[in-house]
Image (cartoon, rainbow, N blue to C red; front, side, top):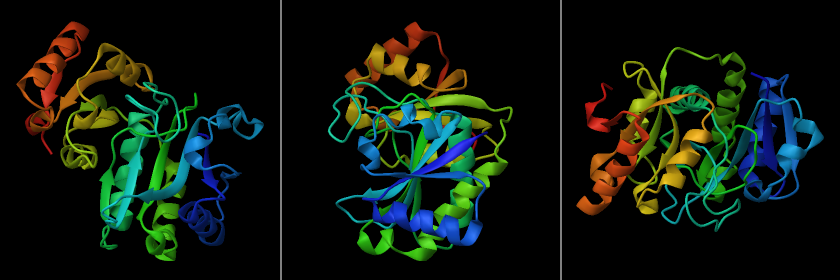
Length: 261
């Protein structure tokens, strides 16, 4: 897959990751500087530098009020409001298999880092038409500038040169918290033979038909399964609304606890 790495000159973690890529891996991969914050780079897919690129990886910082040390991965987009770039109710194209590959590599490379290694749900901008994902260092200035963490992310990104499609099922995740503990286990598992694309969290429920359509349309692979974090689907009324929409779609669904990990 022909891919490019993007980082913002306003982003300390992105600058750190790009530096580690250039110094330690000398990649034969395009590294693109952005003048705007990554989440507001709405027109980057129209840039001549990415004309022939199949997949974009945004290397960025992650911020959280809890300031938990973390290394994270997710697809961009907004299920409802667009408070941090993008457009309301619109998500970016992504690849379930690319996300699974990168997350497994990130977990392997970062196991000794004492950081929380996690997927995040689909959130924030930019809205672009190229398949993409964000890979991030969190969650404060000290972490963003940590060279070892930058090297872990750089190593994970450069290993994407070895990516190839596999015979796995593609799934959409619905429910649960922002940091996806139940979906993390499935994405890391070889036994499940499942690759997870977009994730719709509990805080964005109730599920609507347009939200489901966005998740399906903006996944490169054919989605053959919906994964439900059952306890994270809200009250019984919200659960039933989710099931009603899924039953109409005709796509099979399972609770995460039913999947072999």
